[in-house]
Amino acid sequence: MNNDMKISYPSSEKVYLKGQKFPDIRIAMRKVNLTPTVTKDAEGKKHFKENAPVLVYDTSGPYSDPNYTPNLKEGLPRLREEWILKRGGVERLPEFSSEYCRERLADKSLDSLRFNHHHLPLRAIKGKGITQMALAKQGIITPEMEYVAIRENMNCQELGIETHITPEFVREEVAAGRAVIPANINHPEAEPMIIGRNFLVKINTNLGNSATTSSIEEEVEKAVWSCKWGGDTIMDLSTGANIHETREWIVRNSPVPVGTVPMYQAMEKVHGKAKDLTWELYRDTLIEQCEQGVDYFTIHCGIRRKNIHLSQGRMTGMVSRGGSIISEWCLQNDKESFLYEHFDDICDICAQYDVAISLGDGLRPGSIYDANDRAQFAELDTMGELVTRAWDKGVQAFIEGPGHVPMHKIPENMQRQIEKCHNAPFYTLGPLVTDIAPGYDHITSAIGASIIGALGTAMLCYVTPKEHLALPNKDDVRTGVVTYKIAAHAADLAKGHPGAQVRDDALSKARYEFRWKDQFNLSLDPELATKYYKDAHYENGEFCTMCGPNFCAMRISHRLGECEE
Image (cartoon, rainbow, N blue to C red):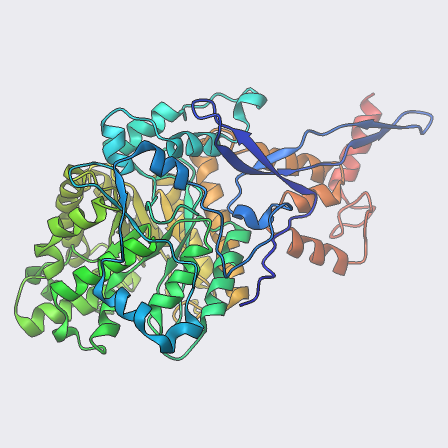
């Protein structure tokens, strides 16, 4: 396993802000240091005026801390473990509860694949509500809540920017179900983050192996790579070999929350035969992943036996893997979905570990032709019922959404979700606004993502250029993450999130003053911006390279200012 996972950003340093309610917590930020503004007086003498550094939201975890040396075989520091143990309500188990997990650990043939620094799992003591939602409903502000409040605000207070985001506001939003802090007690390595319409729009990165492609090392590398470029969460969607071991390596080395679709691994256990799935096997899979540290599950429990036929008249049928699997099980066994029938049991399991539930949209449209149809909305209505049942058990939950939706139909999705799902956070794949651009679906989906993000969607699932075509590699992950950071940030600006425009204004000022390095270093992809600039062979000129010295409008604007003086 390659340990060379250090992350660096140009002209940046890792800084930590201190908590107030919890002075011992350190909230990681990235500070971009800027060069001074240079002006000349009438005699040609240069004058320098300092530009304040810019703090930016940082998802890179300890990997960008110069004082930390990554060791993937040992995993990341267990940041939240002391917080969890100090507030109580949990117990350390003597062994892993999952039968499958114990079998894997006992299998000597897997020794070469295994992450060997296991910690025995924590679980809630019977009768104790230990989830962030349960604590929030009791009026308790946790260290995680203060952490995300400070993280969202960055240095707004120092800049004199008013903000509504306080630890108490975070508590209220989590208690009401309008926001989720994915924070499994068995993933203490993850830095707290929040998903909700009244906070920064977050993005998720999908990765994971397939039956034909990729290794454990590649997936861990992609996970860290995603964190470098700004991915807020990771979903391990592995469907190939050694799913259990792959996930263990990813979780132990992930500074961001990790999600899964447990049905994928359940299908591996029955060798791809949907009919052979059972609640007991699925239950064991949930417990296995809870005790590994998975922070949220996508569960397609909104599909009802009675609604499956609604997808039959579609252009593209059913495009959700998890949705199609449980639908096939329902039809082959002529029964109601065991995910729906055992939803309360699922919540009881998740509540013991503080695992959030992402109510999966198994009937999402796979083409713009199918957008906003009866099948999609019938499932959404069921999700609205299920989310309140999750909240009743203190389980955090959010709602997944489409898919493929043309621009003029996007608002209806947001409006209906708010109405039917009681303001639970919305998590959407795009949506893709046209179907004619394979190879460019990161763009077709980012258009829809920025629109629905501005309307209130809390988290966006990224799409790479290889969507519909192939499993993404590292470069595709980078492109997908940066594209979706653009969409998310555009939405934050539209929503008026406190401090969202600080970085834009700093970059624009640098651009006008021809401070090229500052312009690049403040960008979402400094490396690419710098490369394009250097390729033009006009470095450090006081004119833009497209216009040249005689036609640069910004250079002319500077002269106009001098004339007025």
